[in-house]
Image (cartoon, rainbow, N blue to C red; front, top):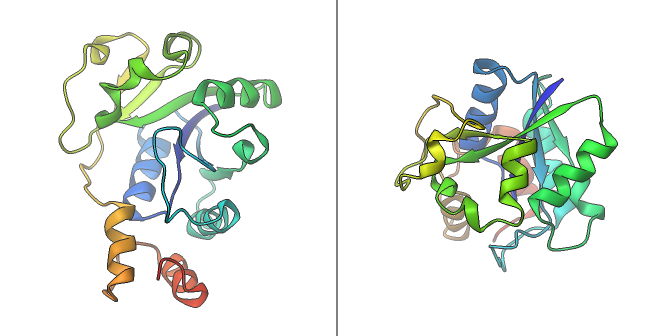
Amino acid sequence: MNIGLFFGSFNPIHIGHLIIANTMATATDLDQVWFVVSPQNPFKKNKSLLHEFDRLDMVERAITDNSRLKVSDIEFSMPKPSYTIDTLIRLSEKYPQHQFKLIMGGDNLAQFPNWKNHDKILEYYGLYVYPRPNSEPSPLEQHPQVKSIEAPLLDISATFIREAIKTNRSIRYLVPDVVEEMIIRKKFYV
């Protein structure tokens, strides 16, 4: 199968993530999209990062009714911080029957040459890039291993959602109902 990998902290998963994942799963040649929940992003030091198992649980609940979307905890057992190339290699070894593609927002494409072994990621995996607000143009847009995917331009951030929770504002419609219920019940981000 052709699998798109959508990496992130998903702190929390929100409607923007789900719309992008579903678009990738239904409007491209990808058979499935796997949410790869990252314990720690090497570029983000976040004091409000929920425990990885809580974030994994929220993603599982959010996608339970969509057979084209899956969640992976592959990075939980890897050295931290985990780098994308290492995760891609581990997944390729564990699932040799699948072809993996990296899904990323256009706002990350300009910084992609700073990633560890970015040239190997391009050569062996390739990128599916979705539009993001305020994306800088990148020469990589013309690379044969980079596919620009038409998708809704969304500007929803987990930071905005966490701030809304802290200030007791509604997050309805920003996250799936099951995620909102879990956040409220477990008093996440307060």
